[in-house]
Length: 366
Ligand code: ATP
Image 1: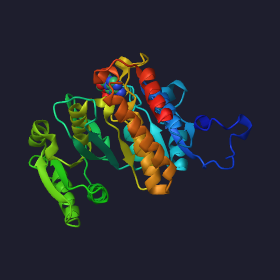
Image 2: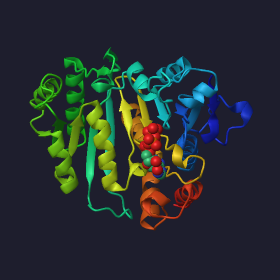
Image 3: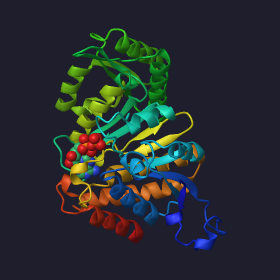
Image 4: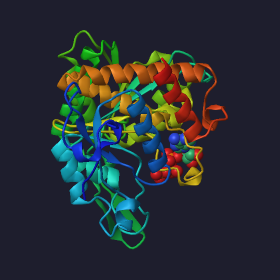
């Protein structure tokens, strides 16, 4: 069911909900999926911050995961997918897929249904967040549609089960082209593929063959292939030797969390899942049920994902007002962190609400 929430257009009276007053920028309609666990808390925080920054957005709230099951629906309702197809953009909190009950993952289903084949995860050092290394500035590009996530698993005989890793020329080629195109547009210097083609000669072999092929069209971007186990060791020894990483699905999942650990944890790594027509922005972290409902989750990863969304809208639709809002939010969280206004996962003392208040105050008083 569609619930338009013009919460970011507070100057609208309810009877003018669907009209844009004169002198006001036309709002962008965006799907919000509050998700499960800490999802609704970090979504609320993010929407407040976007509102404070003046991003003209009308939210359409849709459910997925356990929240959808609670509504008597399936984990990924058709209405949720249809709304994203209609509006082309969604901001999504983490969703829980009940384990061992025959449900296939919400995230995997959504990425496949909308063919969101490129996951983009910037991993950056933040001011005021002390970690072992400084000046980390990595971008992870993860293939989002196949590999061991293809969902082909079966029982061979009693006591023997099998999971199939799928690689297609089409998917390996398009993610590689996408990564190099991104590198060129963002003035990145090097793409490193982590792989295990020495063991998975066919699947990972195809992946590196296609990435090497794509690299040939981008002489301005360096290309290297590193076996993933050695790559992980190099990463924790000195992450600044990498610029962009290109990985197949499962490696991308694992290495994203590893890299999150280098810059302060899962609370500070945003993400986007991008296809040729739709894009879903979401944090790398999951629904963290252990801290749900306690007002202690760090909303920054979803806030940063929303910043990526605003810049994407500016780039793809020319909505400069979104870029301005993004800049305000970035300035606010950088200065807040620097001043020690942090949640507990980053060594601070603020809860989700207090941290969000601090960001909103900084934005509105700037
Ligand atoms: P899921 O199965 O949905 O992936 P999970 O608990 O296995 O959930 P995450 O949600 O990614 O995995 O969380 C791993 C741990 O990291 C959590 O237990 C939590 O303590 C911490 N964590 C994750 N996200 C945040 C956050 N936004 N703020 C603070 N801590 C977080």
